[in-house]
Amino acid sequence: MARHAIRLAWPFLSLALLLLIVAALGSLAPTVIQRVITEAFIRLVMVIGLYLFVGNSGVLSFGHAAFMMTGAYGAAWLDIPVKSKKIFLKGLPNFLGQAEFPPWLAALCAMGFSGLIALIVGVPLVRLSGLAASIGTFSVLVIVFVVYSNWNEVTNGTSSLIGLPIYVDLWVAYGCAVGAMLAAFLFQNSRLGLALRASREDEVAAKAIGVNVPFSRLVAFVLSAALVALGGILQAHFLGALNVLQFYIGITFITIAMLVVGGTGSLAGAVIGTGAISLVFELLRQLEVGFTVGATEIQLPPGLRELGVAVIMIVILIFRPAGLMAGREIPLPGLFNPSTARAP
Amino acid sequence: MTAFLQVLADAASQGSLYALSALGIGLIFGIMRLVNFAHGEFIMIGAYMLMLSAAPYVPLAILATLAAVILLALLTERIAFRPVRRANPTTLLVTSFAVSFFLQYLFVLIEGARPKGFDFLSSLAEPFVIGEVRVPKLNIVTIGITLVLLAALAFFLKRTHFGIQMRAAALNFRMARLLGVKANRIIAVAFAMSGVLAAVVSVLYVAARGELSPVMGLQLALVGFVSTVIGGMGSLLGAVVGGFLVGALTVALQASLPLELRPFREAFVFAIVIVVLLARPRGLFRGREARERV
Image 1 (tube, rainbow over the protein chains, first blue to last red):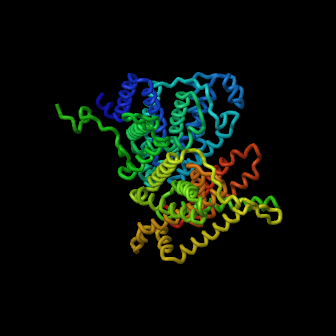
Image 2 (cartoon, each protein chain N blue to C red):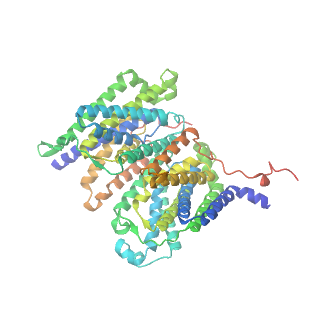
Image 3 (cartoon, rainbow over the protein chains, first blue to last red):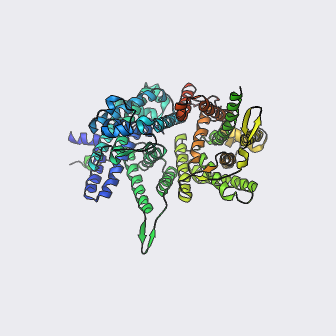
């Protein structure tokens, strides 16, 4: 019975365990490395959110950074100290401007708010497929970016918003990443998730057996927007500062690259891809900061990180188009697997 | 009336640039279902080439720009796009997204991220006055060059050997190959032509703005992208009409929106894009092969 449960939940358990090991090792490491790992976990929350929609529906979204934006700013509206609000956010309505919510409540409200926006834009968008859907979601990103960049009274425009409470550390990020994975795992094995995966393989055939494609896509879209928003909220409360440029083409590219490199077809793909790209990103950042070989100091110019990620992505697309994990989850060790375990 | 004519003249020249960008993207899409995000970077690199070679003699610099962008287009096709040619459109889209990022950050690495001022053909900025309408000479040059290029392209597609093969490939790639159209060659020709279109946009754009930066291509690629979608993916006429429509829409919104809403102009443009996509998911002019078969 217990073995059965472990077998069913293995794809999730294995990844949670993997991350636990990373987090535990990280907590022993110096602060700099802890911060790198925390950032990777935050990215992971975003990538898993993206995966929940893209991986299950097969529709590539270029618009999810918009929900990071609505989430991060939504939480900031609630939990920035009142005296900062009076300086930066003069346009907030009174019930927000005069109040200061606890961060967890702010995060939940902001996730709900982003989910609501996803629901509104999702109702028409999920009817589109293929390229039209990608471009539709991209249009949403541009609209949200333009609105938030220019709506100075409540976003401080293109200037940074500072003074957010900083509460995200390694373990908070770990908890959120595991929570996001659990949500994605439960969704992909639910009735609706399986129906959506069927429509990913063949939309016409899925419709023929009675799958309501727009509805299942919409549910995935709203859930994934809420998770991606959590990623944005975490990032804002990790750095303590917020800027509209954080949530535009750059982060869109990075999160899509992570998902594509790992493989869009499985939860393990999202995790492995995030890990691989984060590692490369960090190594290249070290090169940009500079290092010494013998007596000469070598420092490579900025831009190298993005360049490196783009090269890796192209190489993966050419030689392993289904990604590193190629749609598989982490295999079960023989102990729990009746097909390979020996009979006593 | 004067105001209307003024807006019309601005819209025509803005639309020309957009139509040329859209055409470069539409050409490639028609043949291999690749939405080439990197087209914007072709334009950006053309602009840098122009700056590097502008000093001695301008026509020579324009020729060098043309040659460099064509070479670049052919190289990206050979290195990045040919190996993934058989993949589905989404994979192709992601590949071009990666290529676009690669080229953009390559130039951040080489040239730095800051925009650079570059005074090129600034004498063309003087207005040309017809009645009460003032049109910069550059706009007339832009419209003129666009019309000539469109006519040349139409002639190429209707009358020449390669043009006919290209239309056949756009209609049904597999059938065209069975009838002896060489896939590699025809795709290379399409990329070379999109390179020519990109180089022309580089020259006109730099002359109009007088500055360049590694991210300058992004906006043009986006607009080109959006125009091809509005016009109907796979239809070249659609791409051109879409480009002019988006140009006209942008200029009209700029002229008609109240002052406090003007910064939100792009948001209105993209909202209209979503509306068009919903009303006509296959665009205004539907490409003949755009329908999915079961």
